Image (cartoon, rainbow, N blue to C red):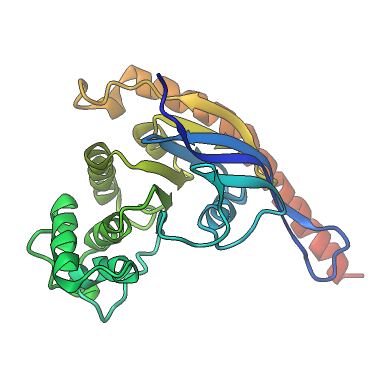
Length: 277
């Protein structure tokens, strides 16, 4: 029996009005995909495919022009503690320690100080930062800061964890290490995760399924099942199956990247013509 749908996007479209233009700018069009409870779904797409716009909609920071987003069957109407968000930039409060950054969402839930500390220490341990609770952000490496950000988003027990290219600013070695950590945390917590990236290798390594977005306006071009033996193969990134899946997703994305570059060149040419009129 399959898990119930946790997050459902149906016909999601997002337009933006552009000053001086008659037609609206369409960032997303007819995004339809279900994320099941406990699933790790990755969205991958070229630059300009509306990935971050979609995360804003999922986080309740903006509303779709049409379509709907449901969490446990109820419409997403604004920000809420039922969704944890991890951004590329760590967004830690510099005047708070690692522990008190993690406690931030717990304070919003009205949890008492002693219990907040207990929970924060539990999640510091989960992300491998026991002993670093009293450090301030400027005393932590980039990878450690992102671990704190993940712990903060998990500590208030959200229904879904939304992640917007959280490892993009890190060096390759740290990025791969945190990918492994994230998979371990996902298995330990059973959280539903929607992870956005432009990296094909990252998408294949992390996702149970990978949804491939088109160039602007972003649509779901395909959803690819990832059937890697992560448990039995200690070097799964070097396996033949990994290479096959990577090539398949690269093929799906290749035309979209070329089309996105063509649209960008056309826009630049039109802009140059207008400035010479």
